[in-house]
Length: 220
Image 1 (tube, one colour):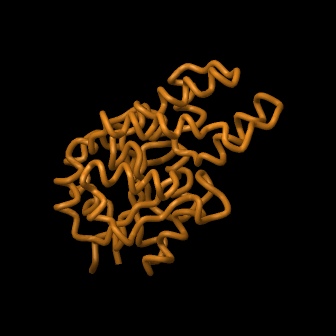
Image 2 (cartoon, helix red, strand yellow):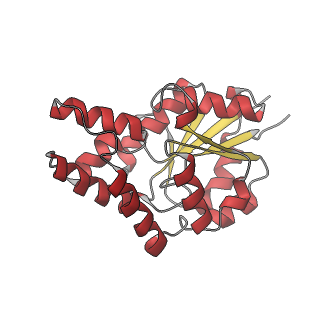
Image 3 (cartoon, one colour):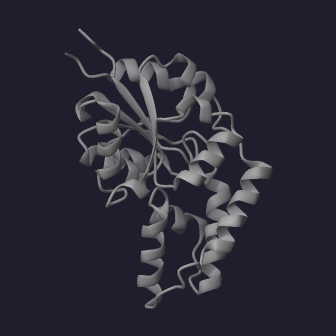
């Protein structure tokens, strides 16, 4: 009897790399400059875990006007500059990955360039090379299940044998919509209550993750 998941699908930002605080601060500045003043908490609530395309679409809907196609180009440079100087891996993630026997992959709302950059800066890229999937590859981003189903299919694993490690409520919603178990990492910006409310198994330290995978693995 196998008590382990066959595939652990990791979100990237806020789960593997500690990028959320850096990114949300830049998001706040970008939104203010186009005319939408939001607090950090409001940005986390509205946007954390969603794709860049969804972010832009929701900003345009709120403003009631289209934004130039390259409106966010200067902010992308700001993200990368912040990452170069301040980005760190999530505390304990290297040790957790060392202890996980199942297959692993990354499925992120970010684009491939961003994922490669952040994983590379934190020494995590070699652990996932060839097993990285982006929302740019599917029609609908989180909270739709498309990205996680795509990752499972490419990895050759049935959805019910997969677990998703997320830090956003939209990511947890996407995991459940895909028929997968969801672990909610609450060691970053997302309040634990938000993840509990979505039915995730919530944890606050990456040191807990390997044992959780065993304890909650599908039976049979």
